[in-house]
Structures are given as C-alpha cells and as structure tokens.
Amino acid sequence: MAAMRNKTDRNDARGLAQILRTGWYRTVHVKSIESHQERALLASRKAILTKCVDLENEMRGLLKVFGVRLPGHLPHGSFDLVVRERLSTLPQLARTLLPLLDACSMLYATYLKLDNAVKTIVRHDRLCQRFMTVPGVGPVTALTFKAAVDDPMRFRSSRLVAAHFGLTPRRYQSGETDNPGRISKAGDRDVRQALYTAAHAMVTRSYAWSTLKAWGVRLAKTRGLRRAVTAVARKLAVILHRMWVQGTTFRLTREATA
Image (tube, rainbow, N blue to C red; front, side, top):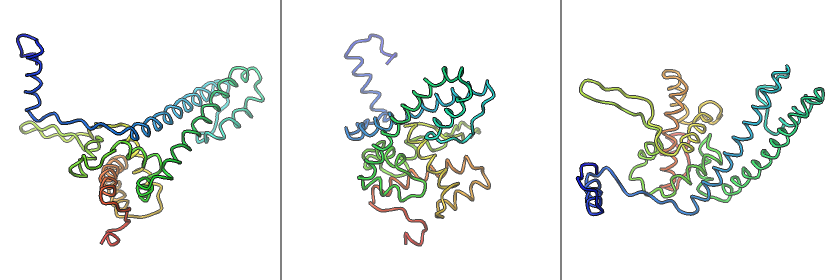
C-alpha cells in the first residue's frame, strides 16, 4: 500500500485487490450469536474467578506480615471461614481485612452462579456431553472448545484445528539453519489453556487408561511433562474436532475403534 504514489480511494481499492490476489488472506469466519453468548459467559466466569484469587492472595500477603500463614491449598469455599477464625485473635487487623473478606465472599458467590450457568448449558448440550466422554475434559473445556470452533466444517482437516489454536511448533528455516521452536501460541488463548488443562488432567490425574494417555506418559519420560502435556493437548484438539464431525464418542483403545 505504501508503494502507491498517490493515496486515493481508487488506489487503495486496487492495492487491497492485489493483496488478496496473493492468497495470504482468507475469509474470516463470523461466529454465531449463540457462540458469542457462550464465550461471554465463560469470559465473565473467568474474570470473577481471577478477581477472587487476587483478593485471596492480597489477604494472604497481609496476614503473613503478622505471622499468620494460611494453608497452601485452601479451597475457595472454606477460605472465608478459615480467615475469620484467624482474625478473631487480631481485632486491629480484622478491621482492615474484614471488608476485603466480605468482597471476596460476594465475588465467590457470583462465581458460583456463573459456574452453575455453564454446567446447566453443558448438561443440556449433547455435543458437550459427547466431548466429556474424553478423560480430563470437563464442562468448561467442552463449552470453550465448542464456542470457539462454532462451525466444524470451516476446517478442511482436523489437524488444522490444533494449528488454529496455536498448539503446533513454530519453525525458522533459512539455508542451513533449521530451528524448530516452541508452539506458536496463535489464536484463542482460553481454548489453548482449556485444552492444556484437560491434557494435564488426563496424563496426571485420570484413572482411565487410554491409548492417548499411554502415549503421553511415555513421552513425558523422554521429553518431560510439559512437552508431553502440550503434545496431548494438540491431539485432543484434533480428536474433539473429529468426534464433532463424525458424531462419535471417545474410545479408549484402538481395539474399541476397530
């Protein structure tokens, strides 16, 4: 566009036409209203949870100054009760922290409402229920993937879904230099995080053994846990899209597929 000597509407239109002729740009998929509504619900849920965690961490830091150390793994539901018990012996500090504790409790109650709304949608959605047959995939991951893809037929191949969400390695090749880098991290960050969380749960926490989990465990022994979980997340994106297109459920072994 900068090569045009005179900037006019006619020259701009011609420049845009020349850019489109290169084939580097393609038609953008516009998501449906239902998809945008689901994404808005998930974004609101995540925002409230983030603020709740920030307030809890702030109170942890303030209590640590006075020698009060809270347990490392403390559920959100029991945080209010534990902190109030500790503040009963510190009346001067309670005057400062109780308003923060009340605000955190209100945020957590709001988060529970949004979380229940997500679970209600997933409970009545057959596609999300089918996604949840995969070990490690929960309601949030299923709804996040469904809302982000929206239309499975816009991908020619299921392998393109993993690249669309930035789960494929980047590569820099020039002459004798060939450097395969880390994943591209392109596309929707929330989907990438949801798939990584589901893959981590499958590899480390799920009791159901499958061909995919066995492959991930073997890979973790040779390449490390983080790389193995990333590789499993990439395969999960492909599998979920294929399940969507074919209308099938997840099969634990290849014998079940045959």
